Length: 145
Image (cartoon, rainbow, N blue to C red):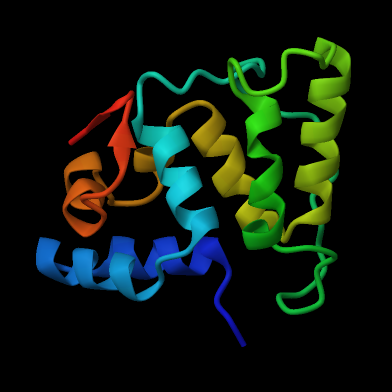
């Protein structure tokens, strides 16, 4: 079974050295993981969601039985950042975000909440420098690292 993104981030966080972290990032490379990391570490990506706690019902379903996975849902991220989908009302945007969180395993939902506030580093030991080394092709704020 494929690991949840929260499990991948925990493995990376637990790695002792930067080369180990880079290797794990590359081994678990996916569009969803890269999108989350860009949203978190790129200062030019600005959340269109309120900062702080999100009022949603945590999905208590065990891993492997959750309704959806972050890898699949990452295609919706553009709706939650500046310039992504200007046609949405703020209420619709926030409701979509809550629906996204409620469909994910609670650990992955927590990751998305951290990322929206650019606080992934508060829980996981992972840095932009590490991400940049693992994925040199990432275009940070319109320029490559």
